[in-house]
Image (cartoon, rainbow, N blue to C red; front, side, top):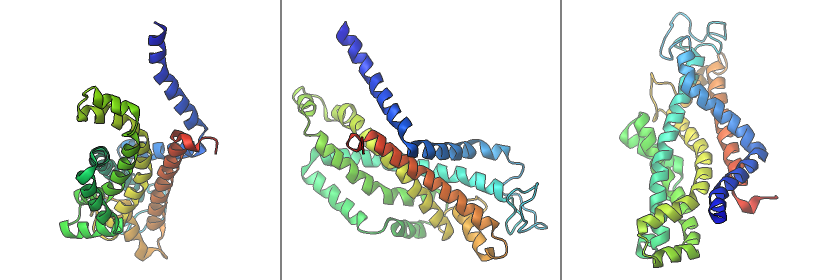
Length: 291
């Protein structure tokens, strides 16, 4: 009876310990607050805006901030605040889709390579090495230029360049976990390979992959903005932060509001996710405790 109680209480104690560590991490608190704010803006902000992001007013281009347009207007008289808020939704949508694809693919391939070893591991890792030999943004630009612009293009191109690094990271963790005694016990007991993946490997690599994902969101948002800035990503009339910065640069000296506010939104979001990722790493990695 006592053993059963201890078995059920242990996971709760583990979660409480993790929550205490997270609460002591300044980066988690600051980064989490920024990320939560951006998420709330992306989810609820568009419905609260007085102007549509596509609504034009050709008699009021490059307007300075006013009560009607708190952040001014762009060259077509569109409200900058509305486009920034809707751009947050687009950026998080792209980031979420890329993360879902890459984490699924990378987790499966990384576990297969690390657990199976042999020729399968060698083949997958050589392909990963080839992909990692080229700058990620450059490959994304090449892929986007070949398949055309649009939201789907951005998701596909960024997923194709982000999965190799996560696959190698997953493999490195699996190589360590594979040597544990409970893995040998599961093999001797006749546990199917797929069950070992789901019950033993995946739960043990979930935390580091979560940290990698939180840091990777910053890269994904920046890469999406870069593609849109170059005209290879999200196109008009759909607003994106990169496209807004690109449109605001020609008028930076005379009407800087569009480029400045677009850059601030992009920079603050990236900082928030990076701080959150660093804090999660410090809290979830026992080797870093006490440093």
